[in-house]
Image (tube, rainbow, N blue to C red; front, side):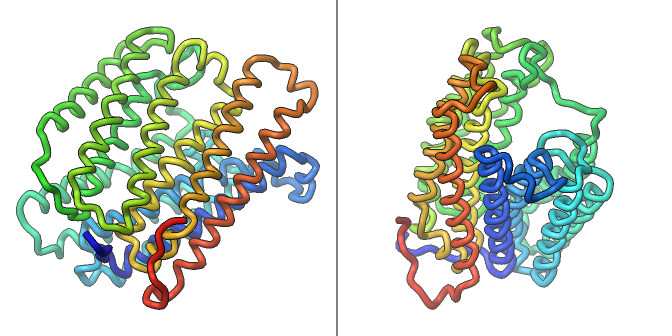
Length: 423
């Protein structure tokens, strides 16, 4: 295909601008955190708002702001929000979502959290986020009701509404301090089975992406892909039933069941007609996906996990997942459903982003390995750790700067400048 068709209108563009805005804010907070690690005395400038209060803000804005909003724009495209009168409601729903994040930020900075990683919603902030989710579901349900499409697609989107209706109560339960997912008691981390189970929905999301935005395909989807996914979902249930540690072959092998998807997803995506403007971020998402799965499995192995757990190596893996794979996937969704202005906004700076992410991840990975080898760094500030943290800060500045650049460009007139390839 020689051009990039617009697959979303006002609603997708509005979601994309908010997504890029939250990416800029979250990355800016990440720069502040990296600076505090290098120069702890800077914390005095923020008074009672200490490092421990900035961390949940950074994490949650990345997940519920930057990561979630491109997916919401994707849902708008799936449910045909722009094809019905509900399109006028979309900006209000996005504003409500962002308002819930602002409320959450006020709670987290004041120290009111559930204490659960990525599930810090509590009392007033939890209520605000529930309202935002209900408003989003109501918009999608109304768009579905007004949709004239029939057949399998209408049934599939109806089933999707049922699944989405379970998200608010599920989040409410998950955020409660009284509930906790299965863990490996020998490490305090997740089991191989739970990691498999949490990644399979991502696999499904990757398989759905080109299909639900209506990209043409040159051949039918092989049925064995569906059966492979179902088989691994059953394996997850069995693994969680019996439990185990990272030293047991069944848990190592269970997590290794993700490895076939390194070939299956790229092979599946090759059969779709991707628009030119999406190809850079499509390839980026696939590369980071492959690196993430391989690195995650290797880091779970005995001896490696024992040395890397609770070190900067864990932070490296988190950024490999979020800044590498998840951000590339979110930027891919924006090219497909975020409108022309946002697509042009992110058409520059992609390679610079990847270089910064790679430097960030490698520096922290090396740092984590050295931290796990000896506790001597706790008594003084060795040069290797200072260098790693300086690389972390410098990379963060680059990523924050690019996020601000993309956000500002997303407001530009999409007809006033040509679409450039990523540089």
